[in-house]
Image (tube, chains in turn orange, green):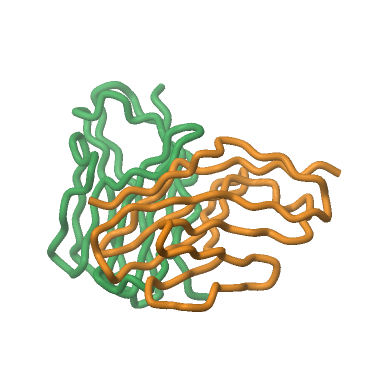
Length: 111
Length: 115
C-alpha cells in the first residue's frame, strides 16, 4: 500500500526567505513518481514539480526544488525567496498507478 | 486552450436529491479521476477511469456513481445515498494510469452544499 505523510499542518516564513515543506512516503514499488501541488484559496490544484524514483538528480523548477532522499523515503519541497503569492496549501503526492495525496501543509508568507 | 472544465462552480443539493457534476477535458488524456476534499484535508479518490466504458472504485465510492461514455467526459453523480455530500470536488486527468511519471491535471473544482 502507498502512504504519503506531511507532518507540518502549518508553516510560516518571512518574505524573501527559503522554506522547506516535509514529505515522507512509503511504498514497496520500485517505480514511482513524486509530485508537489499548490492549492491557493480559490481551490485549483497547480502542479509544481516532479521527481522520478530513478532520478539521481534533485528536480528543480524555478524557485522550487525537490530534496529527494530515497533511502529515507523523503521528498521535501524547498521554496527559495518566498513571495506573498506563495501563501497556499501544498500537497505532496505519489503515483504508482493512481495518485495518493498527503494531508497538506498550509504555508503563510509574512511581509 | 487545453484543459479541464468542471461545472457548475457551486451546487446546492436538497435532501433526497441526486446531483451530477460535470467534468470535460480536451487534453486527449486516457485517464480521468474524481476526488473529494473536505475542509483542511487532503484529496480522497472517489472513482477513476482508464478507458472509455470502464471505471473503478476508489477509496470512498459509496454514495457516488460515474459514467465514461466519451473519452472527454467523466460526470460524477452524487446520489441521495451519500449522507454527507458537502465538500469540494475535483476532477483530474492524466495521460494514462500506470504512467507513474505523468502528473495529473486538475479542473477548478465544484463546491457542493446541502440546502
